[in-house]
Image (cartoon, rainbow, N blue to C red; front, top):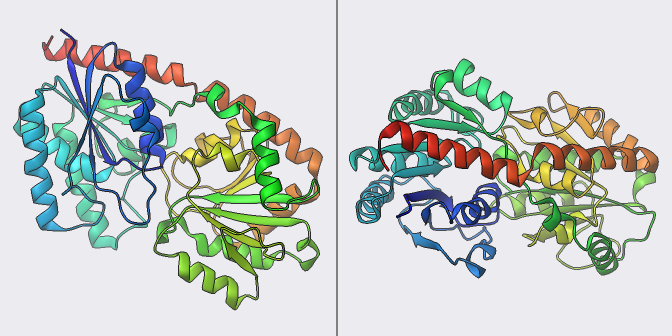
Length: 400
């Protein structure tokens, strides 16, 4: 009889957690009986429907009280619901992903006496989300949760340093560093066709440079800076550069107003020839748009290991990104893109101009990006690492 593995996700939506974890679960279903418990998605999020198209061997369970927003009644209800799921499923391992499941899932698993409790930090809430008091409370609480955890999985060297040294959540002996994994074949198939379709749809000629940013439109992603960068580009670029904002969120109306105030024409979803900025909402699969782009920009205040940077590089696109969290471990500065310290608009504009003006540089950096990402972020390497981690933890717990 196979051991049982319960994976707990924030929500089953388009984003790093689901896109990485669900395929990983499918790769491990011959070794484990797997259930994926997940919360309720928000209105501005796109459901990750790929997970349900081929769910053979994996059970999906929704906990409707598990939501992104902080609500004590919902949070308590989700804790009890999680406990009931765990008691009924009786897993040998509970593996939580993200902040809210990391709280309710680990506490419920501890009360249910689950032999192995593992948590993955895809990012963290230790800064840029709450005020100093809120951040202080979160850090102290995470230290307590760390004591309940058999292992903590981090995705990059920088993240490991933050968890063990900067914020002292757990000792280094509890850490397993396992980078995200990408199925390069899935991301790279039909690249030329996908590029042609998207660029034809949005009337982009061969000389037009397409720049995108991908993610939820929330304060921590700092999209306001992305708009400032667009506004600061010289007028000479107006005719041969298009910007695409891929995603959705509460800040979208404010960002659109920011563009209007700056005198920049934008459109939402339509191929308006005169629009400099296009809001597409969520696009699945992301390769539909990434192959049509020429580079990606990320301006976040806080990131764990941003999947968008990895995906862009696998598709052969250079990146320009803020030096925050684990970003520096996701690409090669000056080789597959540019890392920018701080949030000075001129710094980003300067790097963007280099890549807009120099097609040979874009291509060279894109080629380097593809080679680097495919080597470092191998899906098979990730699968092997988790297979070994789970087996080791179960053996150490005495649970067969």
